[in-house]
Length: 327
Image (cartoon, rainbow, N blue to C red; front, side, top):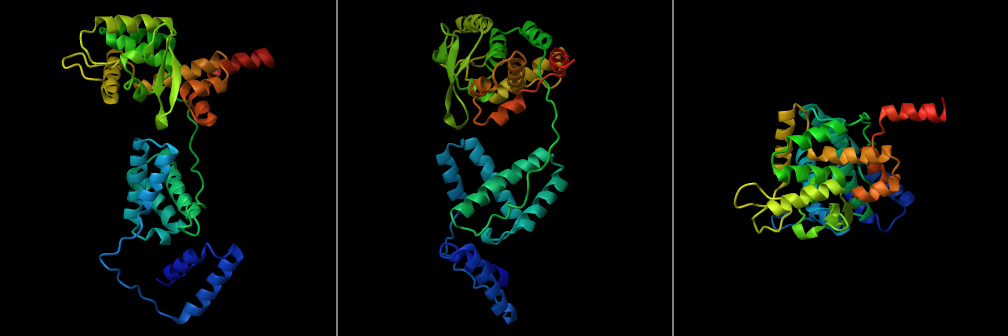
């Protein structure tokens, strides 16, 4: 309790003192209060403390974060607070470190998951620090979790052709071509309407993360199969892709994932997933010499580091390059 009192005083004086003065104030208070016993006054039921999570999420919403991301942020922060059971202003580095260790041990989570949690908590506490709600972020001394750099799988040309040949429904063939030729996210594809497609220019506008618009492009084969699918439909739904049976509802992400998984199972292909088409396009583009800045624009990434994670260079191409430039 004594530590909490000192911390609260430090927080209150933060806007009025520099770092050296704050350190001196802390030393003096620790010395003076050493022989005192301090108890907390029970707060009135009418007391309504600031909801720091809501304030943080409001700030992130203004920055353009999607509702899906905001929901994940809230769940992550609330889970941490529920576990630590301390006032936000009194949470220390060891509390966060112990929480992450315990979380990984109990849930057997990967290092990537733990680092995602660390990153969200770091963003939350850094915002509190910037807004002068706390003195210093307790996550500042918890560094990025090292993760293994695994080369993620992509579809080969043969696998793509096998999937196309096995499609019985025109819709499924059009979906595969759309994902494979544009590299769009499946979440972007399900939002598309028929009138979003420009067949003359073979392009369409999609709404990416943070509701940001960008142009994507498709090839001639996709144009033919997409036109064929749309001409075969008898429904009036404006959605680009709909269910096969009445009432022909707009397809959702889960429906497309299930459909592709089932298709992969029939062909004996493990892990057939829509996001893999995106990674395949990125890798193919890099292998064929597409500038990384243009690929970044095509995929709709804010940071080029994200694009580089998608574009895994094939080892066979490294061998050919070595022979060309060195050997």
